[in-house]
Image (cartoon, rainbow, N blue to C red; front, top):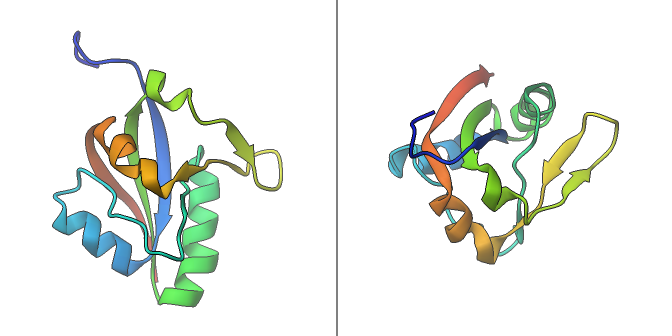
Length: 118
């Protein structure tokens, strides 16, 4: 962490090929706007959960699944309650689509591709 950089929280995002292509086009700096049928952006709080979604859901539905990792200003994230979407480690944040631009403005550094499943 740089001296002038705020403390950050690591988040993961399981994604399919279309969304990953958009992130790449956006220079790995922001998440693309949600589609009308996607009112919520769901980053997850642990890598294992992201892997399960990418491997077990994205591959089945999209032919490939990817896990990305990125850092977000921890102070900003306090506005979002952690949601338990199943078991003890199935944790995610629910970011309303209309807040995604502000969320993106609090990403520190670049979004990284860390796993790929086919």
